[in-house]
Length: 365
Ligand code: GLY
Image (cartoon, rainbow, N blue to C red):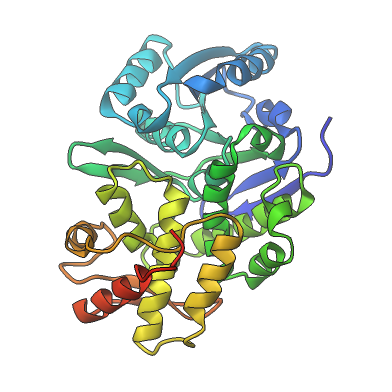
């Protein structure tokens, strides 16, 4: 049974639709092109049952399904996983009209995207995100990637999918921490472009954390619309797409320093608070902006502070962030809510001061 279904258009040159609804997992096969004789279904290990059901539906229309299970977590985003997939595709004589389907979180959509982008220089891709974080971010916009010894996501490509299917029902199996992590990216969309998202979170913070609530669905759709508009304007991150990295300069550094044990959204939450302090210290925004960040993020259970005495390590990690140009720290900052700007060079003294206030006692870790 599906209730109402929302479709959101993405992309100028190779347009596609994001479908959002309850029970829409049963409609994935409708997005597979009529010429596809084979479907490569990549899924993360905890999703074996859902993958088997999806494979059954796809094969009932006469298509061959090649299932490919990847390890859960970042271990699924390695070159050896990709090489194994290429072998399987070769043995299945997978052609350009066949289709790759990714079922899972951001790891699945990133690695499947990379496989789809590289096999025969590009075969159709459908992403079916199963986490809130992947629905509002990773599955949309065509970023694909794997991790290598040199770092996370340093190898990849921009390769938009043909369709994205977000079944909100699957979120009922997500734990509260994973929902909060996904909400951080949705709140980011609120700060950079759609304050309506912040209003919803303010008005009912408990309900937006409830996967069965229509308010969470509303937040998901609004966040997807923000991302859709941005990546439609700038797929390759030559200009406006950079605003999607709000909070991410510091967040990536935190993730690196914490050995990737922090959930991404938790790091983004702290990164946004840090960015708000930087903007306030530089006199770019109203001095109330950091408090607005801390208040809304803590309402949904996200951290808003960090540990003192780690700036040297964090600065080193920020220096290798791939969003930097040369050796300066480039950050997205807010002039006000809904008005982001890319600042090309944030002075080290400002970073130090912002770090000090971020880590002050009572900050909310
Ligand atoms: N996650 C940021 C982007 O897709 O550009």
